[in-house]
Length: 276
Image (cartoon, rainbow, N blue to C red; front, side, top):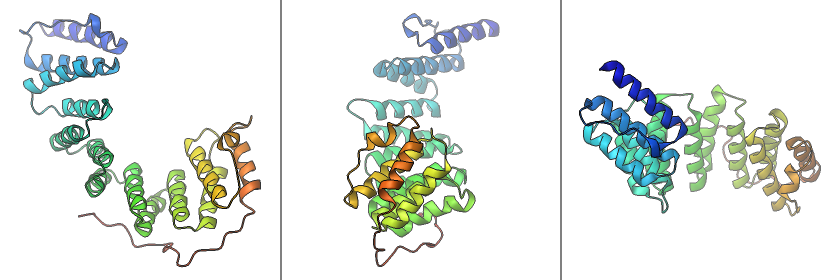
């Protein structure tokens, strides 16, 4: 009986990997509940892969009927909510929250809940759950980046810098943190400091790094602020990609002198604290 179930599950996995749900196995209700639970979960994932979201919901609901404490089922329901048209924002929050409640040791569950709350513009709530994700893994810099971005959006530049600087303490070459610090200074109208940080990112990292493109986009914004017209597509269209763009931007932007604003955000703000 066990071998038979294992074989059936392997067959289902084969279908899942091919996203061939139209030929999926119809399981006999006499199979034990644990196996049936896993089968419905796999079917739900396969249906998501085919973008058959409503059918996937039904499979996930079957999982929850069998086991109301299956965190993965709530995760995938939250994923469906977040990717539906129109987006089901509040339902996504509820499902990701349920997932995080059932499995409170997984940083990604809290991160996903924070993202769902952020998409609904619940900024303070999202900060708390991003911080919970960070507490579970202090190297999960993605969560700190999100918190810093929220404070940047709020116009709280010193607090934003505090979170970006927290990353730099343990990972001083983190290119995304440097880019976000540049964004913070740029928003505070300290154009020269922003340029310095963007230039550091461009010079230090590989041509294929997405962060380099983000930094180039930001440099285009600084040049635009200085009254210098520049086409972002031209920046990245050269044969040498980002390197061409970096050299071009240096020749166009870095000889522009901007007065330093007064006052300036504290370059070494107080350490971050638990949002609680």
